[in-house]
Image 1 (cartoon, one colour):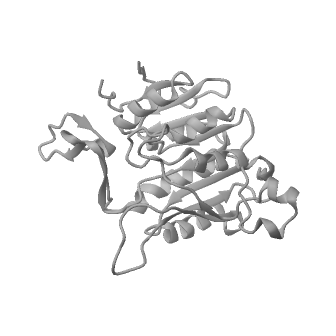
Image 2 (cartoon, rainbow, N blue to C red; image 1 turned 60 degrees about the vertical axis):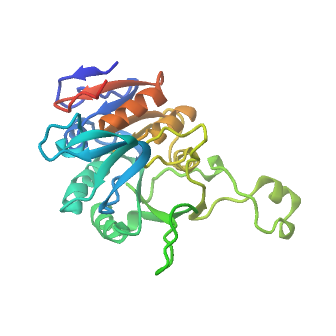
Image 3 (cartoon, one colour; image 1 turned 45 degrees about the vertical axis):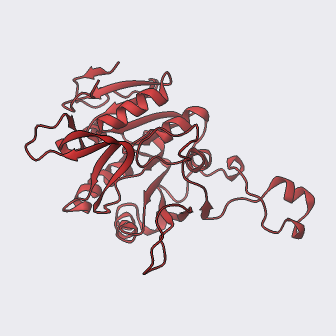
Length: 303
C-alpha cells in the first residue's frame, strides 16, 4: 500500500531516525526537501541518453500520442500498455545535461563531508559528465573511473563491440572521504602460483576494472525491470564507501538494487523514482524493509 504524502517542506518525509524509504516522486521536486550532508553514499544510474527505448520481454509501453494512455511515466509522458513486453521508457532527451546537471548539484549538497558519489553511465555521455563533475566537485575530488565489463548483447560488425559501462567516483572532501577496502569482496589471482598460498587463498583487491556478469534472466535477482543492475556490483560500492547504519541514496532507483544491497549490509536507504513500474518492483523487492510513500503531485502507481 502506498501512502500519499502532501508536505513539501524540508524534512517533511525523511528523518535521520526514520525508516528506509521508497519514494514515488520527481527527484527534482523531492531532493530539495532533504537536509544538507545527510548521505554518506549516493549512487545514481540515470538514463543513458541512448536515443532508443529500453525494453524487456512480456509487456510493452509505447508513447500515447493523444495523452490517453493507461500509464504515466517520466516527465508526465503518457504510455499505453501492449501485451508482449514488460516495460519501456524513453531514453532520449532534447537537452540531456540541462536535465542531469541540477540533480548532480543536489547530490553534492546532500553528501556528507566524508561522502562519495558514484555516477553510472556509459560511453555516450561519460566524457561530458567528467567535465561537469570536475566543475561541481572540483578536479581534486575525482577518485576513480570504474569500468564495469560484461559480455552479453549484440555483436557489432563494423566497430569494436561496446561491452562495458563507466562509473565515475567523486568524493565530497578529498581529505576526509570514507573508503574501506577491507570490507570489499576479493577476486582470485590470475596467476595464483606467483603469490604465496596465503595471498592466493585470500584473493586480491579489485582494481578499477570490474568483471561481473549481468543479472541472469533466470536468476533469483531478476525483477523484470529493463535496466536492473546486479547486486554484486552495488555490494562492492556500498561496502567500500559506507558503514553500518549510514544513510545511502539512489534518486534514479529503478529496480531498487541499491536498497536491496543496503538492507543486506545494514545501511539505511532512500530510493527515489518517478516511474510507476519502478515503484511496483521496489514495493515487492524491498518489502518489508522499506516504507513506500508518494511525494507531492507525483501520480499514484498503477494498482
